[in-house]
Length: 164
Image 1: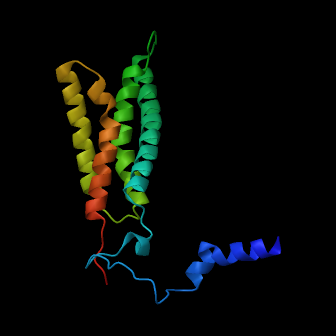
Image 2: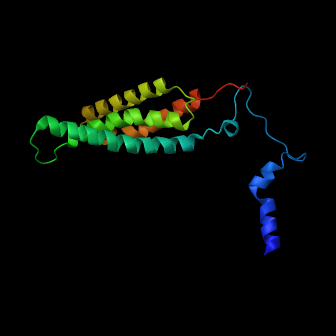
């Protein structure tokens, strides 16, 4: 049992990384003028998309709850489906803010947050406009997914820092 434990310790990645580079290993050159993701610890596009999906969930629930409560307070009495329209509008506003902010935070605050917020608002307005024009709720339901795609794209393109 002890020889297997010693072998596992020698082959573990932490021990191998601590030993440093070997002469037989060749490393691919990094793109000039850009610090690699490994060096900065920045997540890749998949990690940013996951953060965006978490932000979309928080935005839908948080914004939707606030929107529903505001609608209920404005109406006074409530019957069937009370607060549903407020929930949908609040969820849209919540994702418009939460998705770019969470993607920007997951990227180590490297990208252009103002550009991501602007495009997120444009996607929300376009989704609502298309939904009203087509008299269909599908574009409104696809707004959070489009906001995640746009925010990740902006963060990956504007989030690279030049090498020092």
